Length: 527
Ligand SMILES: *[C@@H]1O[C@H](CO)[C@@H](O)[C@H](O)[C@H]1NC(C)=O
Ligand SMILES: *[C@@H]1O[C@H](CO)[C@@H](O)[C@H](O)[C@H]1NC(C)=O
Image (cartoon, rainbow, N blue to C red):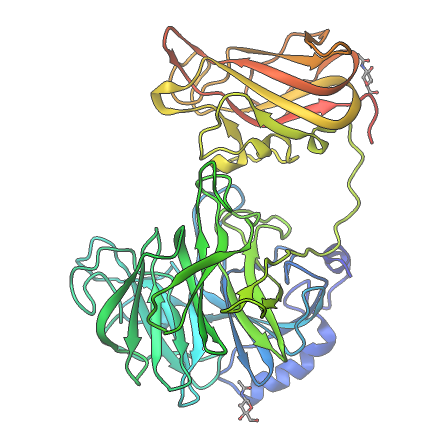
């Protein structure tokens, strides 16, 4: 069943959420009454990734946990309004399935199982960032959570707390009420990093380890048997190529694995096309304290700029759990949890993780459109600065408040070029009779700094004799910044390639950048 179908179904009044399967509700109520302290769950049927895709609850930074052959996925909750580019995260939630399957299945959703300021008396509300729950040797569940300290003299107030519960669903109680177990001043002063993204692993011998960090900094400690006190000195990991954030430590056989979000932006990047993207890479070690050896990339970029993963084995099958912006109304700050099968290559030593293929729920048939640019490959003749992405020219998305990877731009500080040329190439000849360009600007027309609207532009096509020829346009090329620009119709052409030549606003040696959210190539009829 599609989420659209669920949304249009008349929901009985006792249904809290449109996507809920009400048949299961009474059972859940009885269960909730029997265990009063536990949060109430609602069941729903997923039809593929993202697990919950209707936009009723966004879910980010997943951390999987397996208890009694059941998959628990702890996640934060994104609450940013559409087009607001910052994280609003006030609570953690849980998704639970006894028969997880990336192509669909039944899940129970427990919203709001914990909030930073209700679990930790010393924490502020908000910043319910990437947390993880692990089961200790005593059977109890420990929540490692990055929160913001209310009273702190640290230059960065992020800190990691630990809370404990008898059930993975809580209720969670601070296991270290005196304050965080990790911050810029705990366990010792001199830690200058941002202390978030904890990952914890309990080894077969009962010893536990915590790793954490972001912005390229990865640190680790052994934990005492109380699961809340660090032991000995810090381990600083610098051998994991492109480490950015989101570490995930686990063990298979005798090998320790560290998964992480990586950014290796640059011309020879193995995984990220821009400086804001992340892929999931991993390294291995023969000891939980390292040394760690980079092994490769297992998940390409996702539709959100951030990426965050965890992996577990459930009933003999390994899964990688991650997040995307693929839910209805989703975005970089409105992410949703997805998961896919993770497979091992046991012919390698240590065993490698094969590259993971992202799967998505069935998508509605695309609406016929005259814009056939998404079928072309896009390139720019001049170098695209690393924060921008040429592939966003023809992604069929016109964001209102884009991040740099959501548009193409020539802005290069004080060295933005006067001329830029964008090229579309199709595999075989196409027929076109119009074009449209949607500009991004953060400066007024005529400016020679930042990103003003361009001074002018025109389109050429590769003609029958293989030379660039201007299209015969019937109106002037508009440069106004609007998300619904006028079409520039032109005399019908047949070609394998077109290019747009843009002149930046400015003069002399000082030009603004040119920003393009979308460039449409319009065929005579919708297809
Ligand atoms: C797992 O199973 C054991 C034994 O039946 C039970 O005591 C425990 O409560 C279960 N744990 C969870 C989280 O359901
Ligand atoms: C281009 O195609 C559209 C849609 O079929 C049509 O309305 C328009 O008249 C055509 N324009 C030219 C210049 O051929």
